[in-house]
Length: 332
Image 1 (tube, rainbow, N blue to C red):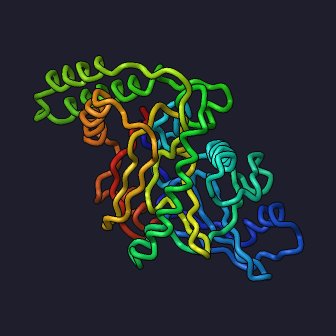
Image 2: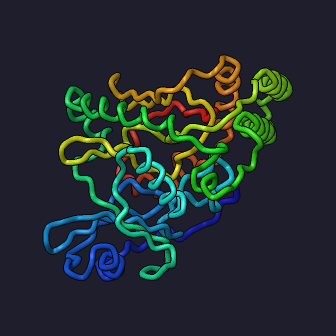
Image 3: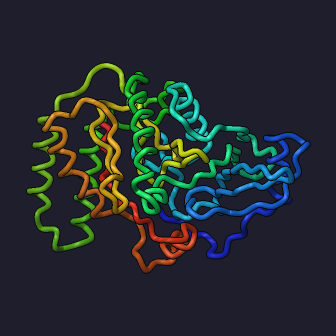
């Protein structure tokens, strides 16, 4: 991944900037009173729009000035690439809606840069906060939202695609860059091991680790048939709540069709902050290969160090260090 330097000072969009987009989404009878750029989005701009009738909506803007990751554009053919972009967003919205899974309603999408010099969308504003905040504020009450979320997630495995990969790719007849999920995981781990060895002379176990990965990968039997739908970044900070406490999935650009899914677990300091996608458990050969391969990928991760300028910008944008820790879901 090749990093590109971006300006350290970025200008937020104003009411005048967003008024044409808001008018296209909600009509001319509501006047946009003010806008607030929300904390949390680091790959796109997220703005709350407040109107003169006390209603609100949320605008998403995919602009280079709103992307704080300082990385090349994501590769749509790679299921592990950043799930960002209007095409991924709208494709995932349509799939979730068809599956009966609650997600903020899409009110308007502008891929033609009609109202802004960037892709943009407007969705309904859910005012109940995030599930992560609810778990921190009142874990007992948040249990109801978790139960409702689990009920919604039971619908995902029944919705299947002809190939594995991001739904924006698969639904348009595209194919992923790797021939299978296990191949993508294995190739990624081997590339990571090579990068680690080149950067750190202490990585003396390269050959042993490479042999171990290849042995584990060879034992994985290929899957056949169609691929169920999964959310690639399921966690309490990726779930919003309606005013009456019903959950809705966000960050849906990571939605994928994939092979049999195992457990997608996240933690935010609460034992109750667990959600499990109900699918058949994977074979031990798959979990063994995955649990060995994934730490290799994290070890060489090109993410900036905690003291870097890019990391500081991301922390400032989020307004906090994320308390959510992850067990990376494995799409195979």
